[in-house]
Length: 224
Image (cartoon, rainbow, N blue to C red; front, side):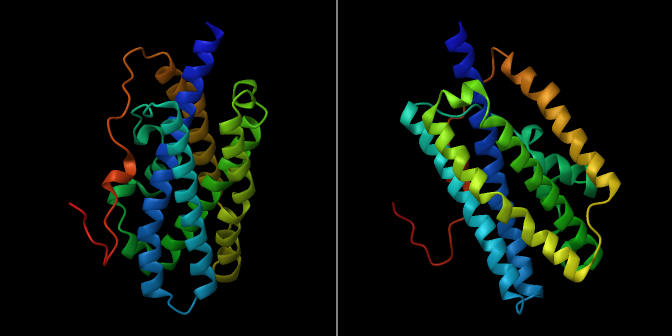
């Protein structure tokens, strides 16, 4: 019984992470496109966001391989389990897919807000990894421990560039309302959404991988 509980917990945990890592890098693609358009001269900041995007993609692939090695697919979780999804919904009033990235970049105030949201989300992720690295179920899985140690190493470089940008161009770090949104999102996920999924016997597994629907890079050839 304990082994079954441990397996379900880890499968659900990794499913939530694989969703969030995919959501992270695919959303940063839009941010990078807009950044390169408005701030082509800010090569240092763009390079840091590119690294953030590459790390999110790397983490996604690590979780994907973890499932593949087990011969299983992740559970089918949606944006209700997405930290950045719910933060965007609370702070911008729309779903992340509906966020007009070009308009956000064009507005100094909106771009500063986006930087604060990303910063808060990544700091939250860093704190959560610290907790998971000491979780008994996670510590018993060498594969996941290896993944989370990589995530732990990468996380600081994911929020510090946005903090530096805010200090250099705006000076306003996260507002109280945004900090409250971060706490509410995290608590609702941990205390309500994830337990409800864990206890749902009908929770289905995915039949495809999230990256199967990623846009084909320009110039790439399609193999038939």
